[in-house]
Length: 494
Image 1 (cartoon, rainbow, N blue to C red):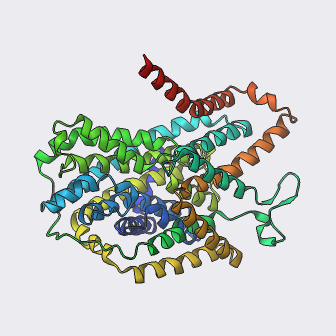
Image 2 (cartoon, helix red, strand yellow):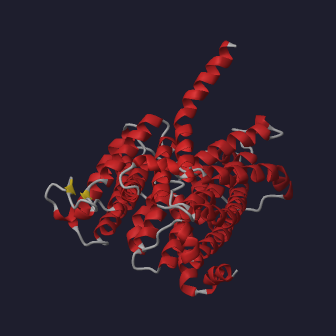
Image 3 (cartoon, rainbow, N blue to C red):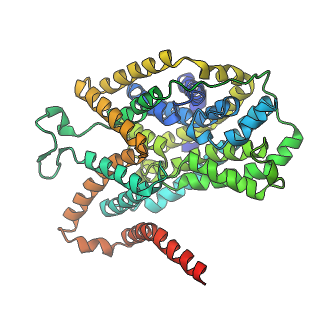
């Protein structure tokens, strides 16, 4: 209880509260900008949080993460161009509502559904993360190795539609994790005589490159696309009839989004799309969907914001990113000297409750902003690309150079941006690459530590029940598509 009260007390600290407000405003702004997602923004601003305290840094990044998902719905409804990928399902019914002159009603429901879904997931996070950490508290290097392998097995499901391409991208990230000095043998690997690479490839330059620079290059290929802004007089509160109509879809989508968010590698976009389908399936008026159904706005918005809190559960409790944005927040924790995992709940519980408090505050703040300033935020999407993206490039260079004052990091950022652009052009997602880079280091280090503990007898891995369980779950994940394919073929033949 003391840790909980201490965490909630940050909301009366003017500095921390200012960081939460700044992160929320920035999150809504960048969420409303087509092309600049929450993950891009957190990667871009990560270097600037190094000088902050750990609590302020995580509160700032967490507020951006919460608010960006809602911000994406503004342009999804008004411009039919989701500012954040997680708002893509919102456009299915939000834009038709705007075309019928109901943009204010759609934006009002989006704000309320987003807030309710986000608050629900934060309460689940408060309950579930400590419970999960107690199970994981007995983890040693062998268990963390098995956990890293489980996390790497999930890269097939994150980001793109092709599991093979996701695995290739993740394997490339693991390969990047091997660059640098081997801690057990002292041998330099893939440094090519460059002294700055002895410590490995920095996470921050790679993050900025594959998210911000690759997005810049991608947007440069779409300069001919012109968005049309629909007229918006005012954002108004949904009626009681609207709330009654959407209550079931919000409740269903909040639970579904939280569950999908907890599963490593899926994230808010998947949650929103699945929730839209389920909302339509259980609706009393499925024929209205795609033509301006308010339930079609409420369901995806509740789900994509609920996935935010859900994705933080494995990130904080196990150190396994639940989404691409939480992978960046995980890096932010590591940069601050905070190692996520079960020990965090005993060593720094107030930091965790500070994260919970900041996410609750961010959800309430963007509700107020959505009702009173959505019209202003919508105009942000009209910023000319000729001004927007050069500013993003300058911030990217500063962000890559800042942590180590090294031009090598700037070169790594540019190279990562080019590779990220090529990857995305050919259907590869950058998110598995980041997961491979983060978890690859963890897998290598814990494997070597485990082999030293086991005196290089790898069969002793199978003498530890948690390791065997995690290996079994990983194997089941690999085999499940094959089993389901065989099962469907058998059913079809029968």
